Length: 219
Image 1: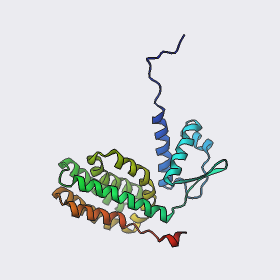
Image 2: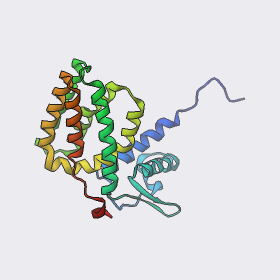
Image 3: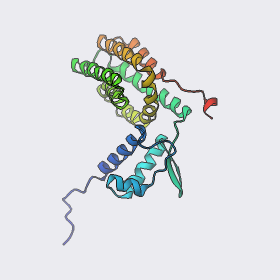
Image 4: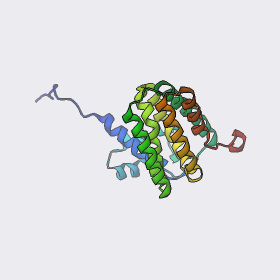
């Protein structure tokens, strides 16, 4: 019996994307530590998938700088490289500044309330010393103007460089969390009132408040 041509195949991209996200998040949240070797067979068993999507995910993680692969030898979780963080910070800041410039004054009441709700969750997470929850709330807040902008290129750039920043931010929120709350409040107010320049300025301030060592110190 010939294979039916009318039945669509399984969307393997969904599986690949899910495996990528699981491994990415495990690196960002510290489940896998810098210098730890990642073996595709062990990862495949952990995730309950074949080795192929794991290998593909590791290649993608390599382009983001989260892992270092030596062909034919091993793949390890990368150290937090300060130069890479600074480069990612500048790109991420520029994308978020673009988003707030384009959406200031045009966000809906629901958009503004989602940002305020995210900041309240951010405050609660800081009070409970739950870094992962604080990062999630912070990401939810900043995602609102990005989503409202609807620029797929911006979203793609942030998906690529965002994880590098997220690793570094885990340290920032333990020492600079309360300052972030105040900046969030200002950003929300400027977006609601349509003050484009102040919204862009505080966005720049937020992302560049992340302390990054000079190249010379990290090389």
